[in-house]
Amino acid sequence: MEMLLFHVWALLALIPFPGATEEIFEVSVWPDQALVKLGQSLTVNCSTTCPDPGPSGIETFLKKTQVDRGPQWKEFLLEDVTENSILQCFFSCAGIQKDTSLDITVYQPPEQVILELQPAWVAMDEAFTVKCHVPSVAPLENLTLTLLQGNQELHRKNFMSLAVASQRAEVTIHVKAQREDDRCNFSCRAELDLSSYGGGLFHSSSATKVLRIFEFSQSPQIWVSPLLEIGMAEAVSCELSRVFPAREVMFHMFLGDQELSPFVSWKGDTAWANATVRAMETGDQELSCLVSLGPMEQKRREPVHVYSFPPPILEIEELYPLAGTDINVTCSGHVLTSPSPTLRLKGAPDLPAPGEAAWLLLTTREEDNGRNFSCEASLEVQGQRLIKTTAMQLHVLYKPRLEESDCPGNQTWVKGTEQMLACVPKGNPTPTLVCTWNGMIFNLDLPQKATQNHTGTYCCTATNQLGSVSKDIAVIVQGLDEGISSIIFIIIIVALGVGVITIALYLNYRPCRIQRRKLPYRQKEKNKEEESQFAVQRAEKCNARNC
Image (tube, rainbow, N blue to C red; front, side, top):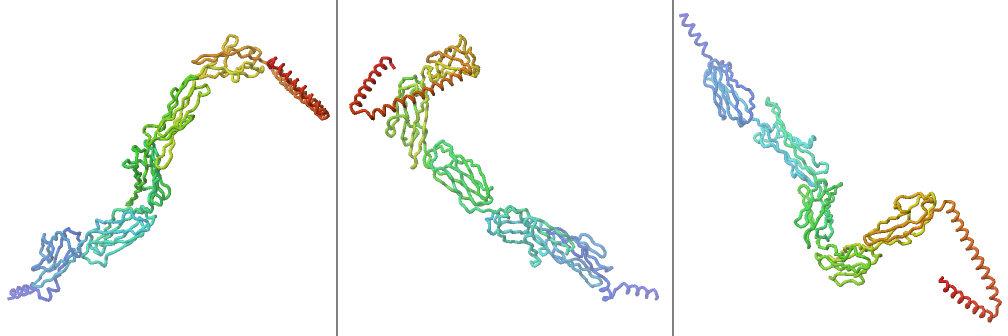
């Protein structure tokens, strides 16, 4: 009987009372806070303190798989977690069910941050847009986007007020372009702070974008002559002012379809291009200049006329004629000149008719040696008078000559001084001069110190291809004292002569003047007859003497 009562009591002890069991067992879930990266898996463990739990499990719309279990716990694998959700973990004990919930938060770091500058090239004082967006990020309320210009913060935005379901973050600002903004770097930084969920800080930045500021308010100017001669190099230029940045302006220049190779320069807010053009076809053409900077492009055109005007043709029948030869000199226009030019030959007596050549018949003289002839052609093109000239020199050949002016026959040297024989022959071709003295060739190029031995006669011969001529030159060497005395003597003689003549004229003129005043008229007539007879006699005597 006692044994039976013990077993009944033990059985009752094992059967819990409803109120006491509810308070005794607990249900818990691990982890107590779930943060899952988008698309990844999560392991959840549900457990209870109930010693003999009944039905248990989890409730979720996520794909779940039980991977393990124990007497008082179960472990589940949640796969491909893509949305935030609330998981319920439940256990029953002695007919009583308890549950607990687990908030699952899905996060997606800002892996792609995109910055846009609109437009990339901005005209000065115009507005441009800086836009940053993150295509996919979660949770959005924990995101902050910061726009940066260089290291300077332009704008900051958080998304706490946006719906949790949104996963797109975007920030946009408008800025007025200034010149100092040119080439500035713009970027966007995204920060996802998950510290409130027990996670860390994720951050990412966009690629850097460079802003370009420009000013392009003027049209280019072309500098070119309206007339271009075919085949001749001509400098042309194209200029653009009030442009920024001037050093980045690009020039393309064309003459018709022919592209030129310009050399580009800049200074301040002005850029220009210089090129050399060589036209190869006659007629009306167009020089164009295409200027570009960033998105801007302008083109300027200037008409030009290409003409053909070769120099006129000057023909001398013989460039090296002998003196006394008759030669023709002709001046004509080039066949490529159109229309026919007006011609003028220097020295010709008359102007030719339009389209005809000018000519001159010349009998050459020694004085014509070295004479220059010029043939001038003038052509009117597009209202402008153009002139071209061709020149040639005539060379007249003649025998050597030794003239007294260039080769004196008597020469006086002063003893002890440096002296050279003065003799320059004339002739064409230029003659060679050889002088001999005492049977030896005298050096004409080296100055000689004059001595009495240099006194004598020198024989000089000038020779060229046409002949030769000789001349004797007498050289007298005087001492220095003799030379000075001779000079002084000559000066005294000249002075005395002048004085005597002056006195004689005065004495003869004054008495005659007084006497003539006193003579009667008849006496004056008589004196005139005597003076006339005296003049005739004097002239006869002079003729007899060949004076």
